[in-house]
Length: 422
Ligand SMILES: *Cc1c(COP(=O)(O)O)cnc(C)c1O
Image (tube, rainbow, N blue to C red):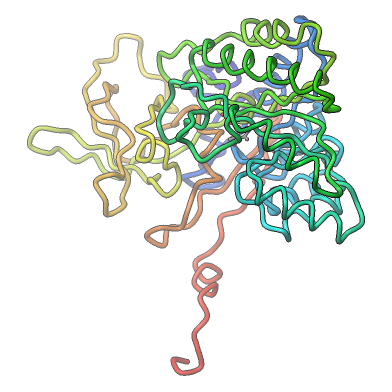
């Protein structure tokens, strides 16, 4: 994470000491590096170019949908992969070209479809016949044609955490390959639908290239078959899912990923879409927190910090690992003690790390939880009536709060008393 490194004993984000931001903004807060996001985008895009693959990179907004993040990536050239009307609106508000927007998701409602059709997006990734029938109806009512991709379920094991694995036949996602031909016949009979593309997305945080290769191969074979059977396909959407390094994983490198794509593209004459989310923003963000208390238990030392599972749920939800480091650089020979790093929430699941070797940390010390740029702020809640952690964006030596901490009054006033209680 070269955009986050120690300089003069202090953890910096680009040219700024994180501690300075912490003192001004208050903890906990998320901090994102513009440089890290743009570098990730450019490396993805360069790897594709080098492999001779032409395509649109549609950033999967669900990883981090802050307007500033979307706009930073859009300025670098990204389109958007959205999974709800809310995300569609966010993408449009950030200035993403509708012709670079893909609408994915198993449960799009007719009102959401209408929003996408009115915006004139590139394609809807369709996952079931009832969904396609609804889309045909909405498009007919609006007097437009809906460009679609069939999202294929290739029945491939992504070898990632079960909760973010989406490409096995037992998952709720996509159309099974054996059922595709029948599906195509039914689709062709529906009005105001243009079948343009096939899509796949087998899961998230993939650290092994082979599931990608299998899925892409199956998708390409199907593409060839359907095209020679007369279907006017022109695009392949390879989905997202490329993993990042949180701990000691070794995700496929970009050239290997791009090679897997270019290999299956041979002779297909297809445009490409990619939907990376985590890859573009995961390592571009940290969650900064302050140690409230150091509690010496009978067998354990607990660091009780002011960030909690409501701010970053990945450790409780996915048993995810985040590196946790002090903002003040420890001495090279500092003695390490195993600590449990926990939040203040009244659940034992509110634990970020167990028996993690750390140099001495005192109450008041700041810590950074690394790789918190993806699936962090977007999954946050106000559980325990905790205020949201604000989001900060850094560019070189400037920073800005790009999402404020909402105050208690505003938070409580979201509840409305009925007449009989007021
Ligand atoms: C979640 C998702 C993505 C992004 O996944 P990452 O692992 O963050 O790259 C892309 N496409 C679809 C359809 C998704 O559901």
